[in-house]
Length: 221
Image (cartoon, rainbow, N blue to C red; front, side, top):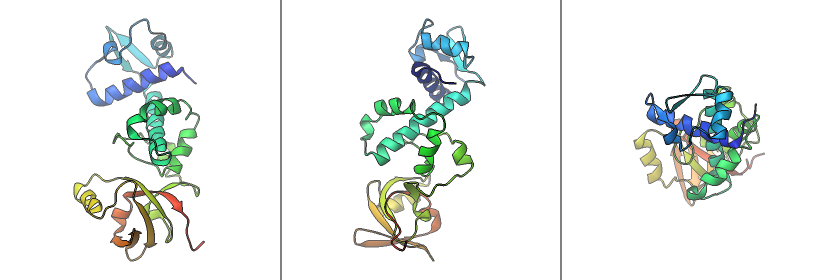
């Protein structure tokens, strides 16, 4: 069931507020809408939200819908920033427009192509979709972890997924940052890659954290 873009924006804002505020009540003022808002009543009629004494919350019926909208928005940000080179400070508006297009499973195709990113360019978590839970792969994906590349493949680093400050500092010390071009040289006994005129060796755990926009195919194929 498709709902209006305005209703989707309310669900997205409500889901985001819920994640930030936890069990604290969320008011219509927080969402910057009033009781007469047409999209608000659309959601009430669909039973996606509930409203009482000026406070609003997602119902069990509306929560997965809202989560999917947030997922589409953050995947849209990844596509725009990592693939289309949109500046992060101007990505919000086009991502809002694009999220309404990524419906009916299209977002899963984008997610697969991007290598199932866990966070958006702003550092916010991307809710996993069915493709992530099934660990679905696709030969034509354009973003892949360094550990999944074959010797000769390479491209531009688009993001590094690491919650370990020490490992992140190690990569930064190597000069491995978003935008840097690297090429995988070998996979065993360690992952050896080249950036500029310098080669580095890392273990699989670190190689799994570096995600590449593939621009160079396997030279052996």
